[in-house]
Length: 216
Image 1 (tube, helix red, strand yellow):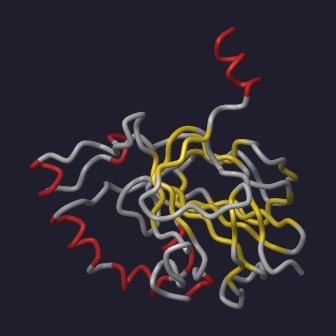
Image 2: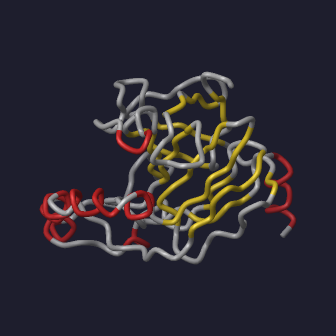
């Protein structure tokens, strides 16, 4: 089995890098559920910003659809077979400022509830014995099913705020076993490299998609 896996970025547009294993391992501060090399991507506007921070957002939870990433298409990062497609978890409000502190206090409860409580709505794709998980998708958006073969670039669903998530984003990790409780983390790269925390990457739409948009 390969000791690492190279993926395509699972989206187009501009996305901010958070919790990158390029900066530390384990990237999320824990090795639980094979998250050592996981990475998070937060969609941002053309100016590199997420939803504006206001006094209200510092004091109260915010609607998830206020954020630029909510319902943006999430794409298959590799060719493979769908081994899991979970789509029934609700999207909850986003939490910044004081609400994020209150939300953090409930994380132990979600961790105790297991993988689904943390991952939320998710798709897992197996390729060459390695499984890639894409998590926190929008409820009701997943349009693939277990056993389906997908190609890199196929739309899996929309970015959401389900599971253990303070604002809409996509969490990506690779593992070596379908059983997440027994799996080991697999290092990953994207287009041959690993972006660092705070970097904003821009993934353009494929030319054929741009042409279709112009003709529509």
